[in-house]
Length: 84
View (cartoon, rainbow, N blue to C red):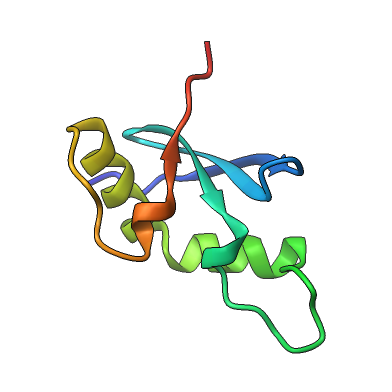
């Protein structure tokens, strides 16, 4: 599996990060990311590190969603998006 995953931007309104995986684009909600006591929400650095460390799970979740399946928890919170 190609593990390339790109973070496009943070979607402020949805409190999620727009990522592009080999399986397609998706939103990864901030609530999935580990928070540190001094952060009310994950910093960009924390978010990018978390996404990088979980790229395989994120990609597998997007692949499952594309097949109409439900990913394993907590990755079932990831949503597909249309970039058209």
